Image (tube, rainbow, N blue to C red; front, side):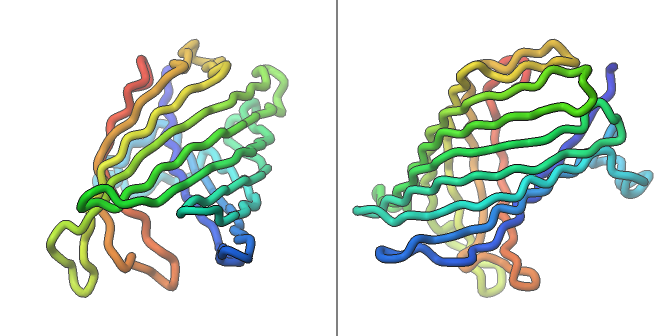
Length: 219
């Protein structure tokens, strides 16, 4: 109905067992998202933080890590959870499953990472007015990172260049907006971080960056 929703993802997680050649790794995936209706980040300066959260989702799960030959890792996962919202007809159950393969290698002066993944996601609405939906996404991505040549405190800064190609089989649709998701999308950008990474109360801080996604009306 012409309103906007901003969603912020908080990719919480905890590695219970580090992977090794003779040991399967185990990581708990604990992602949380919070959404705000008709809110812009710039509004904080004038009106402060929003008075309420309009949507919250929590989709816990487990991810296993298998170390393969020549710097390859295989990472299957499964997670399930729910989403609640101030609009009752969009409350939903959420399911996700997938497998990712990663390989670290050296490309000239860069440390490189390739990751390929197949991801399945499903949403089931409680209200009954919106249709349930699911999709399968195939992703291939490359990142090249190297030291930036300066430090902040005792943390050397590094930068990375990345590109991600997504292909959706039966892409999800926007039942309330009528916007279709393009089957193929490309995102590319630059990201900055520190090595060793910054931590707050032993929690690693994410890297920051800027990217652009080529995705038709959703670009």
